[in-house]
Amino acid sequence: MTAPTVAALSARLAENEVVLIDGATGTELERRGVAMIEGAWCGAGTLSNPAELQAVHESHIAAGAQLITANTYASSRHILQQGGFDEADFVAANRNAIEVALAARAASGNDGVVIAGSISTTEQGGEPPAPEVEAQNYRDQAKLLADAGAELLMIEMMRDVSRTLLCIDAALTVGLPVWVGMACVLDEQGVPVMCISGEPLADAVVALGDRPIDVLSIMHTEVEDIDACLDVIEQHWDGPIGVYAQTGVWAPPHWKFIDVITPDEYTAACKGWVERGVRVIGGCCGIGPEHIHDLHQSLPVGSAQPSNASS
Image 1 (cartoon, rainbow, N blue to C red):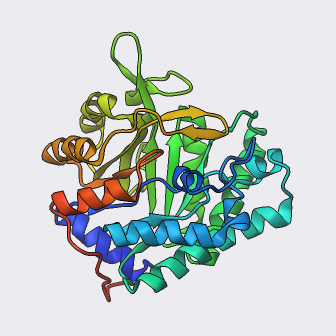
Image 2 (image 1 turned 90 degrees about the horizontal axis):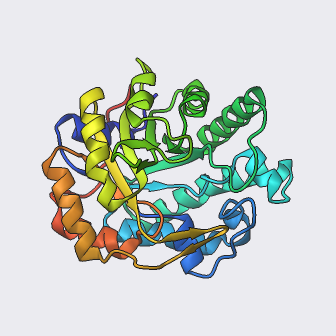
């Protein structure tokens, strides 16, 4: 059954409306003083600082976000293990992250906001487990998120083709809508490639095949590289397209807020992406509530509204 919030959001996308999602969760936690963990980055922030995490979500909702992403990007079993956490922590980090996001929505009084869980193939400096173990870890994480009340799954920072498909297929097992985010750079010839493997973005998009993916996004990618990536997406994908770019510098396990794009500058870039057909807009690392607020004031987006429709 599709959650009423997601049904309403999907209807808006079908009507070619612009949907505004949140900015970064992990880097916003760090900016607020939450400790980042070597090997597990922000994954345990849910356990150490749930009140601050709820405040992050509430600030994005207040800024105008119509979807908030739970703090589970770095909460897969193997990532938490390499940060020194155990199985009970894996369960609690994922379950509690959804509960905190739901609490933020309730506190905001805006019951139309969509609650998304995040799953990523991020390595955080370690080596991924064997493919069959990794796939099971993602299946278990997806089930935890769905059982806790996630309404949608964001498959984020996909950086190579084989593990992208492994992660997506695991997420699809729980029956929630799935959005996919590709992280890219431009190679020496200016061709968009996956940011770790160097495989062409075009190959990754084609490899998705007929998987039931609701939105395909370019995320955690430099603002100046987005248009070249969109050129590729538009050639090989006919569904809704999203963008949530990054700004700043990654110095594991910390995000450095260096040369961060201003809200005005980011809004100007987003307006250009919307003009070319992008319908989901938000921010990744370094993009905060102030950016989302400016986007909400400047882009043709409305308020999140629930729907009684379900399927």
